[in-house]
Length: 379
Image 1 (spheres, rainbow, N blue to C red):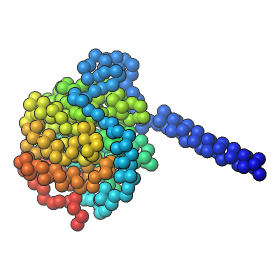
Image 2 (spheres, one colour):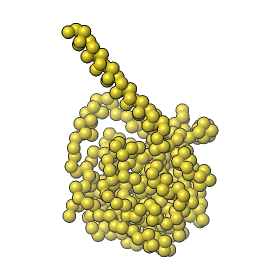
Image 3 (tube, rainbow, N blue to C red):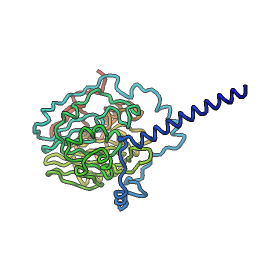
Image 4 (cartoon, rainbow, N blue to C red):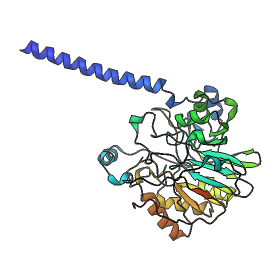
């Protein structure tokens, strides 16, 4: 009997060891060979980054002290909340998505207009230019469909293939819900120029984007594209697409200034003094798209709470703000409507207008923006 037990034990042991080894090997192969993970900046790029005041010990730094760490016991207490089923974390009805006519997009429009795709993705048409902001058009914000939850809506306002020629694609940072491999593959041959934070161009080159189309920018750096001013400005966040490359590329926000309109796009950011600095240098803004979703008190230093979103709008001297980073994916534990409910209340208190269009709705910057329908409430 002891020999039989020993034999069974060895069989179970080697079987478990083989399974664990296979899982580890598969993970290593996936992270090393899947194109989704992109590519880190070269040694030459890192050497140049070392000359920057916000790059230390091989990592980019925020302008103000920022921590993303939680103590062990707090993390343990939060685990049940992560895995608990929350019926309010995503809509239980088909949210409205307005379809966009591809023929209408090729017509010249004045003034500038925006089309929201949900989360932080936009098409901006300004001064005859077509600009995409953080165009994440995929179904799941993760390196593999099994590693994330699907988009709320079944369709986009318009398929990528039907978009007109794109003058510029602008990225705020390299996280999966903002920089999507599949979307880049569909856009790389119909886009004239890609503007990215420092280091993010390495991902694009690895994915087959012509190096001549890519322009990397540092905080407070400006560029002009056919009389359109674009400035890359700070945010309070982090970067990274792999298991061990956090802070390897820069992150930030964007100022887009045309002949008539001055627009701000926050990317992802915790609240901080940088909003005031940006407002003083480039404001006032006609319209500001501000992060307002996927937040939690435990990581508020890198993702604003809704009340802080409204405060950031005041700091920026924005005429109207729009909450973004919600309406498409569930990446935190709050209800999916919590962002709009709270930012609307705080905006009213501070006297700053908050506009919440439907996904696919055309937003004309110079026109009066009034919420005609609370579409996020179940009909």
